[in-house]
Image 1 (spheres, helix red, strand yellow):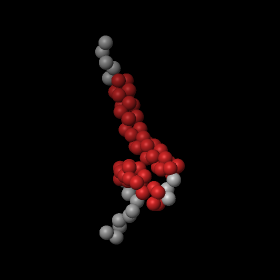
Image 2 (cartoon, rainbow, N blue to C red):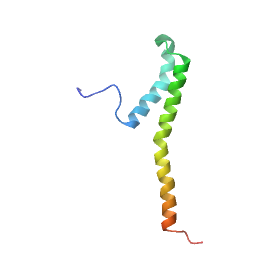
Image 3 (tube, one colour):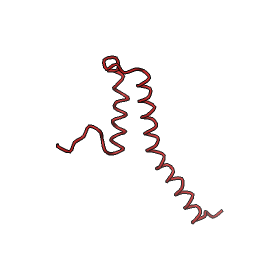
Length: 76
């Protein structure tokens, strides 16, 4: 696998890696000398990354509904 990298290329794979690190890194924090502040930053970063991936999908749904309602008004 000459083209394999340690850093995932897709957003879904990056999120999976962040979630994996967030779940498992605290077990090794003392050994690796990772501070509680660093672990908190990892959690915050993971949460925000997940949020940014969800927001465009949610906004598309909202705007699609508003646009559809504008074009095809519901009868009262």
